Image (cartoon, rainbow, N blue to C red; front, side):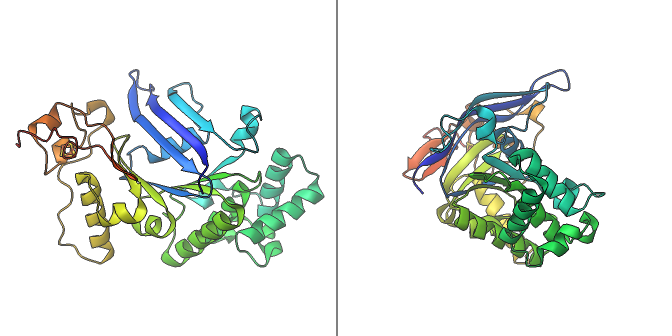
Length: 324
Ligand code: SF4
């Protein structure tokens, strides 16, 4: 698990649909190693999904500007053209059911996809579809192939999507909130399927989630995002047990209090600002209980504070002066 497979540097993503540029991901860098599971966590709208889409090469709209470098460093495909490399990065989305065509059987959807991407005959595509469904834990694969999406549970639909995402033998899988729309049992089945695939295929996974319990079980490392920026990075255990950034602390406290059924915890004060009205200095400043005057002036950089730990906060940058 030591070679870097994905190297993202200085990623900036902006949308210009409203006539002005709105930057929704700001100077994001990440590395993903072979076989590693990296979690992207944070509130809805913090830039997690759009980061995943940019890495998967799925942000191809004229209104969308993606800047920075996204390098796929597979040994096997180093000299391959960009479009071949891109096939080694697959993505599964939040709602499996919505990603499937409701009027086509699973067999039709899977075999067409496999024929298109892998240039196989109908017969070979069907054999491959059966193998892929087995890989995600289905036993009676012919029964699944015969069904229309409406005849699948949410968890089954998500596993079918997972099987389809594997058709090009990806080396990186981006799973965007794969369990958000599922009940506890189906969530557990999907997360188990993901864990088995990661191990069997030596897949590197980016797990985008606001479910900290799921990331605690699955991820080796976490990036916490707030308003399009990484505010903290560290190993999962260290970050969840001793969060350093005030936002990470409140996010983790609130999540686990609610998991335990406790409602005695104050929500983070204020609201997430719009991207077009970001405050000067630290974006978390209007909501932060530990802010000092400098926080409203200087934007904190993501600083390395130990071997595996980075944080973007003036409490650790030496600029925490002039308490408010
Ligand atoms: Fe709070 Fe200041 Fe740290 Fe931002 S930089 S999180 S405002 S203490």
